[in-house]
Length: 451
Picture 1: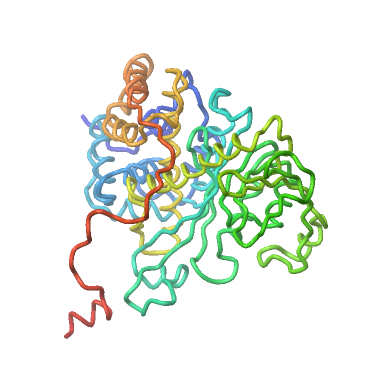
Picture 2 (picture 1 turned 90 degrees about the vertical axis):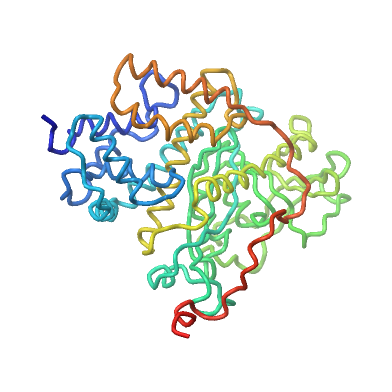
């Protein structure tokens, strides 16, 4: 006789961990602390006997990993799981699942992202580091979402677009580990308006950087306030110099050809995103190193030219483009470029779940690399994601030695899926395949229907 009640808490936690290979005898354990898993379980008013918070979160994770991203696919995943555990099958109605998603706490989802990212970043093998530094990457991107009143109110479309012709758009700035590819932290906001730029959102992420972290960023982040705040907390940096700054290498302390240390004075005009009190606390001047390699000017707070030659720093900076590849992976391969949720509150949760799923896949890549003497950045993300999707139902039903016999060969398979290493291609931003020959909308779709 099949069981009709909800899965026990112990079974829910075990299923959640097994699905994403979180075993105690594997590296990078404790990605999501048991205390946080318990808090997720206790969150909200649990009305459904099937879609408890943990079951709902796991289904949500596989929904964003699926090829369609449909709620029906998430419900089908839960149905297969219950049948495999000898429980009564749930209905294919998506209503209970969608209501359970609403009750998930955004704070718990965000904490799961940052917790998993920091564990991967801080426990990275010393062989994956650059001169002993844990390198971080920062960049921004944009995401679209369905054209609903709730989304338009919180994340309005671009002002140049007529009403009904555009999509709500959200800006996202993220911190990514160079060694493991994990997302350490992120901030989101509207695309336009006061305190919505990349540097404004980045100011909320500075506290996630640690002493002796090394941050790589493009010229957009090269501001006096950013450098001062990062230096104050002991975070090192390598940025591109702003194009408006004219560098004179005859000035300052000479370190080598087109390599010097200079004093930068505090601007008289306050940066928009920083408070008056915080601006007043910044030093009146900063000491930075400026150098040029192949016509590109960089700034850094690594002052020792002997230990950190400018060519080595320039080569390291070229690794910054990997965060753009990571964003492409999340947006294109994981389908986050166009979000699916129709309310702003659910959009925030959908973004968090996408990044959590991304980190959990990155964790398995890091485990495979650690156990097989590889580097995570040399292994295929898509191969790991496909293996996780195809073996999830099998891992749920197994425990102990039987589970280990399945997971260890899977990690070996991930380690065997190596990708080629190349420098950033110097190519124009164009596409080969032209879009279909449909004209652009000039009025809302509803007006086309009525006419």
